[in-house]
Image 1 (cartoon, rainbow over the protein chains, first blue to last red):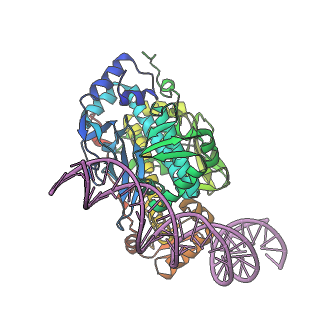
Image 2 (image 1 turned 90 degrees about the vertical axis):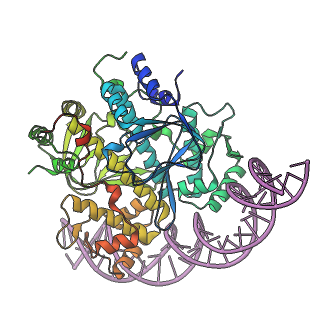
Length: 249
Length: 249
DNA sequence: CGTGAATTTGATTTAGCTCAAGCGGGGTGG
DNA sequence: CCACCCCGCTTGAGCTAAATCAAATTCACG
């Protein structure tokens, strides 16, 4: 039932049938986009929002010296910058890591959706707050952990995020469409050092990683050894309920 | 006219007299708080929000290994986590860098304020989005710049933020109540290395820093040499206007 | 003045970077 | 169908920016 978008937002709110229908209708008819392209670029001021129904995307900045920092991943169901109209322009770009299914929603239409359904608006804001929490953890990761903890913690986060949307199988495996170069640009490490660090994680029996497929052999131990605590992902509760006086549908 | 809070929010919206009055009334009667204390701690779920009218505060996380990452600064007029009720609990703490004047606003009251005045709600959301943009830049800074660019960029950001609230004087000076230890914890560097890097910045004639007072001798050149571009601070425009159909007051 | 915290400087170590070369596998074109 | 080629992965050798450890100096404050 539903698509990745409605599933993702359902984490934050208990929607009525009416609201579900509205969400479904706004996310119908995705278009196919090829990997490598950008959904939006730094400096642009778009009048539409992009919704990722399938595939992976990533936020990034490129510095004058050519270096690139990856700022976060968008997984299926994620929406990019609902609130772009509140700021003057994009301060980063969003690129596609894989082929993807994308819906383009005019800002106006999204605006109306949020005005009509406050619960949807709050759920969208929740996802912004969670993104920000993840960003804080990334900063902590890059600022304070050595390469071993940093890579391990990162994989742990991805395992949890993928797990929360049902994309981890019973063998703790999931598709990880990231090159070691991209992992490095997410973590402030070179691809060479990411490679050596992954080797250590493999040798320690914590992960397997071949062919863009990751197995977290022992999620508990990996979390333990990297100091991972999933609290910051704010999974699993319905926060909008308390903020709405109207009895929910 | 107004306090630091109304001035800060005015950056994001052109408020009516009515809205101004509401903002003033909610931010009356600050309490004095001593430096070193926490406004809120990781794991807590408060039912009130803290508004900083004077002084500096900082968001931070402490890891199991004892290391600390500073995640951002709150300057006068900043509010901490208006939307804490949307998530289940604080994933970080907020401490005071200086003695401060703080107003405690019950979540309920803030909730009503936002429901009554959509323009205020949008302005508060704007400040969340700007915080997130700053966080992205911090991650980029820590992930991709060497210590010289990192410290310089950081000081450049602070100069701009302080300047935007009128706290930089005609000699490009402002109070910077951060120890080198705290700068280090913001930047993922040790205090020793921050010290050596500040020395280089001084020798290059870019800054003076004594007694917690910073002079940016040549803001343009400092920005040039550190690759600083203030776009991400999203200063100086009125984004809420376009989103409100109702003719503003 | 005296005391503790913050800054400064020096000596040494090291984690991660750079440069460079080899390898593997999957897709393409002859 | 096979050869080739490109891209990503892997490994090695050496280098360097920043960390660590330690001591001296300055500063703020009582």
